Length: 359
Image 1 (tube, rainbow, N blue to C red):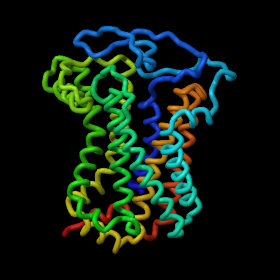
Image 2 (tube, rainbow, N blue to C red):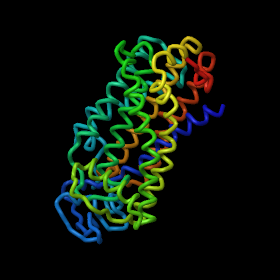
Image 3 (cartoon, rainbow, N blue to C red):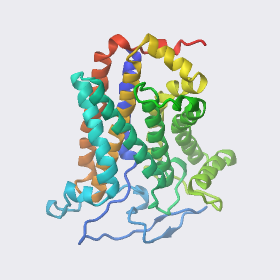
Image 4 (cartoon, rainbow, N blue to C red):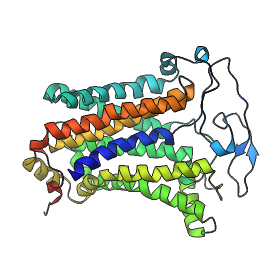
């Protein structure tokens, strides 16, 4: 029962990502807004206005904008938003639709191998594609922020998290896992451990560095993180958080603890690999179905929330209204189906026993 609550909380926590990746509002044609000055990289805050600063409205609300000033007649439609970006129409939307189909199957208790396996294939494949899109996307604001709330860091986190979770979903699903993939368990397993653990450690260090600006050791962790992620080794200092950024960084810590709940299977794959997992499936034949499904629920809910946030930035509806939509979507795509899966698959799964493995 404890782990079932942890699974649900892990998926529910995905909704908080909606608020963490809110960025610039794209104003529909015919609409304009002033570009106000905002802080950029400097040992002492300075101000500039550049062509890529559409995500800046005021220093205290960096990267957070809304479209309350638009009337209903001025707003673009959902179709306008989908057509505005190949990423939304060709990658994210198909993943959300596949995730919706997977969630419906679990809600009604349908696990027919032919249909269900094809849905899992679609979710995993599209998950990897979306992860790659996050990692290679180039339209990143040149305004460098502190550590975990920097836009480039958030993109890298989103891409590596989605890739690691997609790998986990593929690895634990016996019907789909390629014969060659278990050979990489010691590598991919530990890389995924770093991703999931970094989900907690990175924002913790960011908040710590902001609270103790004179601590050279903690400061170095943030500067080096920015140098590596942005591939710019000339970075020497980072601006302190605004009040809004500090709130967002603290929220990322909570999200990191949710993401870290994927650590146990990643650690066991890194330590024991195929011997552990084959033993688990012998004792609990539906464990792979449950683990893969819950991982994919999280991916689908996260990507749906990213799409909802992007639609709000595009001006379809105010962000405050879209947050409520995100809450409902997260419940429908993740919380409800994982509860149903735990019920329908309870006879062939376990919560803790498969971790009592001794080779």
